[in-house]
Structures are given as C-alpha cells and as structure tokens.
Length: 240
Ligand SMILES: Nc1ncnc2c1ncn2[C@@H]1O[C@H](COP(=O)(O)OP(=O)(O)OP(=O)(O)O)[C@@H](O)[C@H]1O
Ligand SMILES: [Mg+2]
Image (cartoon, rainbow, N blue to C red; front, side):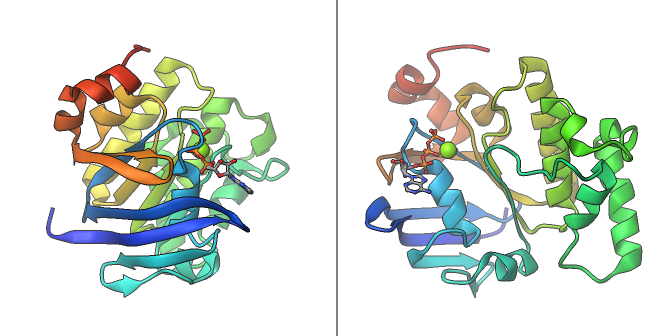
C-alpha cells in the first residue's frame, strides 16, 4: 500500500436543496479495500454516487492525482471508476454475456476484452455456465455476481460496491466477499465497499470509516474498528 490513491477532501453533495454529505474527508491507499459503515440514511450511497459522478458535488476528489470532482459518469468510467449500484443495475432482458460485454463499453482493445471475459468467468464460474441466459432469470446472488463481473470488465482502478450483500443468503454473501478479496489481491484493484453487515465488511476490508449524518465520525484499520466499543455496540451487535 503506497500512499493515498483516492483522496476525498471536504466533499459536499446532495439532491437539490437536500444536503446529504457535509464535508467528507477520506483517503484510500492504492490496492486497499475500504469499508464504509453507517446507519440507514447516513449518506453512504450518496458518497459512492459522488465518487462516480452521479450527483453534483463540491469539494475535492482525486484518483492517483487526477481531479475527478465535477466530471460526468462516463468520463469517470473512462478514468477507471466502476460503480456497482444498490440494487445491482443489471440489464434484465439482456443475456449474461451481453451484460458483461456492456461493462467494457469504454474499451476498444478487442483481445483484452475477450481475455477479461475469460478472467471474469474464472472468478465467477456460475456466470460461465449461464452466458446465454437472460440476466432477469438469474437468482439474486447470481445477479450480484453479474453486476460485479460487469464492473470488472471495465478493468477498474477503483471499484465501488454498494451493499453487495443486500437480500442475499449468508453463504452466497461469504462467497461474494471471498471473490472480491481475491480480485483485490490478484489485480490490486482498489475497492470502496458500503456494507450493512459490519462483520463481513471488517473481515474483508483493510480500513474502514463510519459515516453518520453525512460526516465521517470514525476511521481506522479494520482491526481497530472491530475492537472499538461504540462500533461494536452500534454495528456488530448481531451475527449472520
Ligand atoms: N434521489 C434522491 N433524491 C432526494 N433525496 C435523496 C435521494 N437519494 C437519497 N436521498 C436522501 O439522502 C439521504 C442519504 O441517503 P443515502 O441513500 O445516501 O443513504 P444510505 O446511507 O445509503 O442509506 P441506506 O443504508 O438506507 O442505503 C437520505 O435522507 C435520503 O432520503
Ligand atoms: Mg444506501
């Protein structure tokens, strides 16, 4: 982990007059998995939207030295920011393969795209077996895998995951997080993951931040946050 890869400084964002983020400061090292924890409505989804250009922002966002704030989503995708939104956002009438190929929309390197299709299928064998199946007929877990697989087809430098475990069985969720960790280890992809399941998030992440009412109230290594009494009380009070 060498220096800060993603830096967020005094970031404000919201919807119209509704202000949601009130000056978020955040730094993520290159190749790190960073977890964002926090209660419902804290602004976690809005933070990811701000990083991928889906909401208007004020403040600084830099990725490997390049200023991102204010750029539209397609420009950010070209700079390597891949966002797997809450609710997955797969194209349900299209096949698994068509969805995966759409993930590479910014790329022109045909050979690289074919190689990455193979690579994604190696990470998610369940998708290889269903390349010709329409995405709408996949199970929830398979759809989440497709959504992450599609994001990987961008060859992201920054992968944003919003609640990947939502609605999934514990075993499927564990498998998903295992794959995210493998991708992170093998490709050094930097990951920011928003996750309600704090146990899982702190297991997979290197560092974590707690967002409450649009502000970061606690930051530290995953180990430190796991040991923090308030985090334990607010976020680790249950086990899956
Ligand atoms: N499209 C929108 N238009 C207006 N307000 C919005 C919109 N999306 C979210 N908000 C508001 O912004 C605030 C933060 O929402 P956000 O979705 O970022 O929270 P969250 O931390 O992701 O919550 P959850 O854990 O429930 O997913 C909430 O008060 C919400 O009502
Ligand atoms: Mg959310």
